[in-house]
Image 1: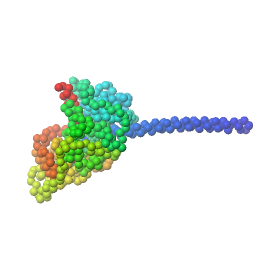
Image 2: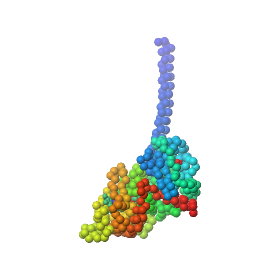
Image 3: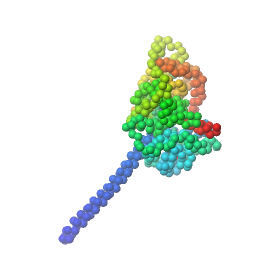
Image 4: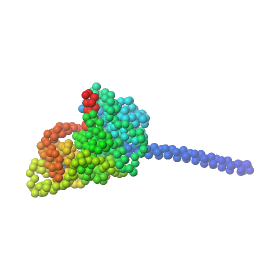
Length: 458
Ligand code: HEC
Ligand code: HEC
Ligand code: HEC
C-alpha cells in the first residue's frame, strides 16, 4: 500500500461513510416523514370510522344481507320507493370520484354531486351541525377505510311528476339549517357541550324523537324548552319523550341509566325495541363511555315538556289481587294467561331480562302506539357486546282479539301505580291494519316525502 492510498483511502472512506451517514439520515427523515403522514392518515381514518358509527351511516346505506355501505336499502313511501345510495369508494357506482367538497355537499348540504337535492330521508338537516374537521375524517374513512363495492344505484320508481326533485330543493332552502363553519373541537371535558354536539348533529337523535311540523321539518333543531326531543311516532312506534318529564320522560332516569340503555340496550327501567333496537345495535353500543356520558349529561339538562307531571308511586294492590285469586276482569285474566310468566304479577319483570311494566315510561305514555305494536308484533332486544343475550317477546297478533288486546293493555296501564288512558279495540284494529307485511317501510321517509309533496301540491 502506498503512502497515498494509506492517507487517501481512509479519507475517502470517511467521505463515503459520512455521505452514507448523511444519506441514511436523510433517508430515515423521509421514512419518518412518511411514517408520520401515514400514521396521521391511519389516525384520521380510524377517527372517521368511529364518527360513521355515531352517525349510523351503515343502518340506511346497507341492504338486508347486502355489503356494508353499498346502498340499496328500499324505503317505501306512498308515492313509490326510494333506495339508499352506494357510498363505498367504488369509482363508477359509488362515491369514489367525490372530492371532499362533493362529499361535504351531500352529507351536510343535501346536494348530490349531480346537483340534485337529496330526499331528507338522508338526515342532512342534522348533519349540517357536524364540524368541518369531522367531515374530513369521515371522508378519509369512506375513501380509504371502506371496501369499494360495484353496485349500481337504483333509481326511484316514483312516477313523473312526483319524481321531480325541484320541490326538494325548495324544501331544503326553506327548512335546512345553515351548515356549521366554526371548526373548534368539542371535547368531552365539557360534557354538556359535547353531548349537545352529538345529539343535535351526527347522532341525529332528534330525527326520530322530535315532533315534526305539517311541512315535515323538525319542530325544533335544538333545545327550545319544550318540543325538542319531546317524542313522536316513527315507524309505528312512539320514540319517547327524552326530556325531564317524570312520568313519560327521562326525569327519573339517572345518567347511569341512560348510559346503560345506550350501551347494552337495557336497564332497570326498560329495554330497547323497534327502531331504537337498531340504533343501539348499530351505533350507540360502540360509542366511547365518555361520549355516552356526555349524551346522558346533556339529556339531563332538558327541562320537562309538561312540568305539571307528578312522579308515579308503586301500588301493591294489583299483586295482592293476583295473590288472593280475586282477579276477575278480562284484562287481568289475559295478563295472567299471556304476560305474567315474563313480566310477573308484581309488574316488576326481571331486571335485564324482561323489562318492568310497573311505573315504566313506555307504559305510561299518553300515545299507546308502541304498546299496541309491541304486543301485536313481539320484539327482540338488540345484540350488544356488553349484554350478548337478546331476549325476545313473542307477538300476540294471532292469539289475542282486538278487544282482548285492548283490555290487557288498559289493565297494564292502570295497575301497580301506572296511570295512562285506556286503550280501545278501535285503536288496536287501526294498528293491526297498518302492520307492515314484510320489509317495513320507514315511516320517517313516508312522512317526510308526503309532507314535501303536500306542501308542493297545495
Ligand atoms: C336515516 C337514513 C340515512 C342515514 C342514517 C344516512 N343516510 Fe346517507 N342517504 C340516505 C338516503 C335515503 C340517500 C339517498 C337520498 C336520495 O336519493 O335522494 C342518502 C344519500 C347519501 C349520499 C349521496 C350519495 C350520492 O349518490 O350522491 C351520501 C354521500 C351519503 N348519503 C352519506 C352518508 C353518510 C356519510 C352517513 C353517515 C354519517 C349517512 N349517509 C347516513 C339515507 C341515510
Ligand atoms: C331511527 C329512529 C331513532 C333514532 C335515530 C333514535 N331513537 Fe331513541 N327511540 C326510538 C324509538 C322508536 C324508541 C321507542 C322504543 C324503545 O323504548 O326502545 C326509542 C327509545 C329511546 C329511549 C328509551 C326511552 C324510554 O322512556 O324508554 C332512549 C333513552 C332513547 N331512545 C335515546 C336516544 C338517543 C340518545 C338517540 C341518539 C343517540 C336516539 N334515541 C336515536 C327511535 C330512535
Ligand atoms: C316470553 C316472555 C314474554 C312474554 C310472555 C311477554 N313479554 Fe313483554 N317483553 C318481553 C321482553 C324480552 C321484552 C323486551 C323486548 C325488547 O326490548 O325488544 C318485552 C317488552 C315488553 C314491553 C316494553 C317494555 C319496555 O319498557 O321496554 C311491554 C309494554 C310488554 N313487553 C308488554 C307485554 C304484554 C302486555 C304481554 C302479554 C300480552 C307480554 N309483554 C308478554 C318478554 C315477554
